[in-house]
Image 1 (cartoon, one colour):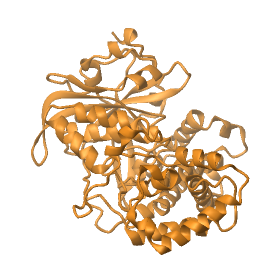
Image 2 (image 1 turned 60 degrees about the vertical axis):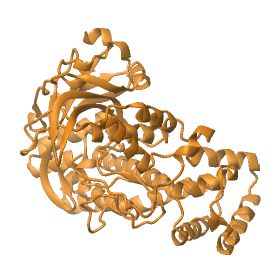
Image 3 (image 1 turned 135 degrees about the vertical axis):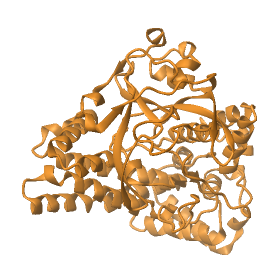
Image 4 (image 1 turned 180 degrees about the vertical axis):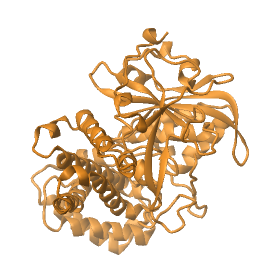
Length: 480
């Protein structure tokens, strides 16, 4: 059955020292039933959607070549170091795609593992649909991310605050090697294990680094660059990850682990959605700083490899870490220029952008719809655009645009490609999930269809652009 479906697994992660994983078969489903299948992604992976059965996608049967393991890692969770591991996730293997990509494929919600720490290892339907919807929306927005192949009901009840239907998510990513994976290796204080992991990460993600004099410095440099670009993309669309622990930061520079994440409606850098982030550690405006902090923890793990002399190693790490702020600012400002249709650079562009953001904060403006309206005012103009302070800013912006050689049409096209018409509005996601939990998948289907083309400015998007009632605070929860 596996060969018919197109599975083409390799299992290179299993060649690492066995301290990095524990072999673990997935839990058998009682009555597996596919509720959503990403046929387009299946095709990209070289899989035949018609041969992907509920038994395979629930983990009840294993694809040919699969070698299920739970990965070990550590992490700073809200700043506190903990030894961790996949408590309800399994890596099945690495699919070799028709395009030559190596992609991790794994299960989430497939039962207990050696790292479950008292948990049941299962997942409920709602959170798995949430990850499916948002991860695929992030992909459509052009943001590096894990992706979702399917959600399958298991027939198990999941006991949380209430009894919920159990489900398994099949997800893919470039790899699940995390900052926390390196922290795990460093904590065990065996340099040969750390080196094996670093060499693996280089070979898999940054093979050119192996050709330079100090490949481990090059590894650090490339991870910093990837993360600076990733976090800038988050900030440009108003995405709040919600739990930027070091075990949720990948070496590949992809967004993973969609737990208490959400998107801004009202623009406010202090926005926090997670119910447990009471001190705002992971608020929207803190995300670049937290990424820098996490990268410092990554650099600490590499010190034994960067140089034999510790002082030299520290200097190398500090020099690389010092680049993050400038890299992030460059990526973010370049993205903001595109959102405003600025195709060249002027020295006061940053002040132009920050003045707009300040006006948006004061007006309690919707983040996405502000840029949507600037891109195409036929989509509707917010009332606060009539304020004299905004009109003054607009005149300044229009003057700035008139100073570039690009035509208005070229400028507008760049804006449309940079400003989504739709995002996964939190209330729309919850509405679709609630219907799915009652057995109606139509709202999930419609939402996924709209979110697959976020830059199209289609008339059918209009119903999905309205923000939620600002009087009803939105909260998300960990453990999803």
